[in-house]
Image (cartoon, rainbow, N blue to C red; front, top):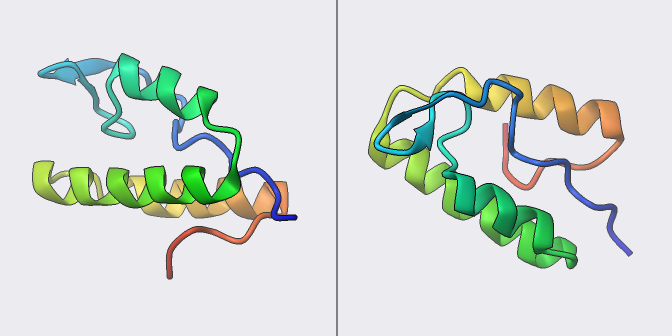
Length: 82
């Protein structure tokens, strides 16, 4: 069984971009949704959705290296190619 992915949250938590966090792009509802996901496949799909959201919104290039470091610290393979 795959290990659980760490939350995409990078501990910035400032909701300034029309309700989206300036650190990870998640809304408060999306943060709750990720916590409710139990299956690693669902978590990976959520992170994929989040990457597309960040790409559409722009200005989230800082997120990827921080999240990769978080995955490495947990010993989990990241859900995307670095």
